[in-house]
Amino acid sequence: MTQPPIYVAGHQGLVGSAIVRALRTGGHTNIVTRSHRELELTDQAQVRAFFRSERIDQVYLAAARVGGIHANNSYPAEFIYDNLMVQANVVHEAWRNGVRKLLFLGSSCIYPRLAPQPIREDYLMSGALEPTNEAYAMAKIAGIKLCESYNRQYRTDYRSVMPTNLYGPGDNYHAENSHVIPALMRRFHEARVGDAPEVAIWGSGKPMREFLYVDDMAAASVFVMNLEHEVYAASTEPMHSHINVGTGEDVTIAELARLVGEVVGYRGRIRFDTSKPDGTPRKLLDVSLLKGLGWQAATPLAEGLRRTYGAFLASGAGADRRAP
Image 1 (cartoon, rainbow, N blue to C red):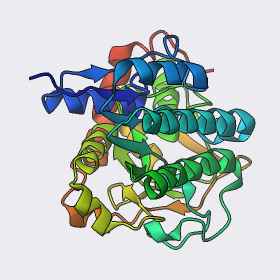
Image 2: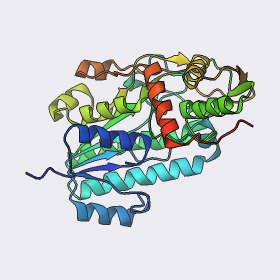
Image 3: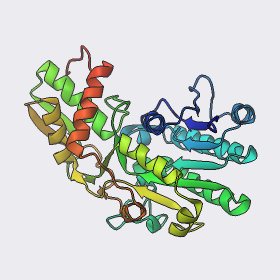
Image 4: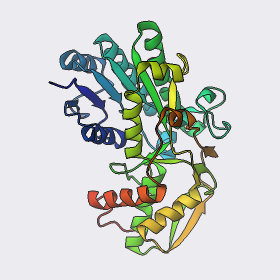
């Protein structure tokens, strides 16, 4: 019997590639993917033609423009425009073409900058956002509300999960435009290879962050997608339907830097550049809802960092690099 087709949007990215791995591990063989060159998701006509031709049953919407503080702060117009267009096109055409289920992947940056900790799902829109990534956060909030609005009006089954900071194989290791773990990994690797006496880290090192290994995120995504509709509906509200995904534990950036340095094997000094922004002081998600539904993260941070560094070396991302 032929399996119904599952479309993973953003399959070449960090999260999308992990979702593809998780689906294949679970026995799914009819997985539909398209590269950015094959399908431009910001183009409504292309997205419409794709959904008309493929008869998709489920969608994992992991496609997004993403980046760290530097990228978000430098390119806010691109971050809000691209993400709004991708989400609007995919959700709308999924509905137009009878897609049975859709899972939208958001981000913990949707929550207020000074939200009480740990952050519960119902803290959404209760305060001001972090200015450095406001554009991205607003787009992701819109994605949640897209799913909820189509559910309310058209009785679709479109769900949302909000992951904490993710890391793992397939990440972007750009020194400035990447997220904190891949950026640190690259800097420490280059410093070790180049025998640099110190590594400079943005900010004071005091902010606290929670980190989730990407294959755990993929497992959580499949878990939430496969929940019975009645269970998901009973656990959420029509206008407050997203679910946090994280570990429920956090570390300071200083502690993280030391961990990454140890994994990479760097022996020099770590200096914190306080002229650079810290971003949100703390972001720890309350994951009690997802835990109550029967899922929790399985990969400790130190183990996830070791696996990630192994993938970094295998990818050749740090080959022949020298510290400045």
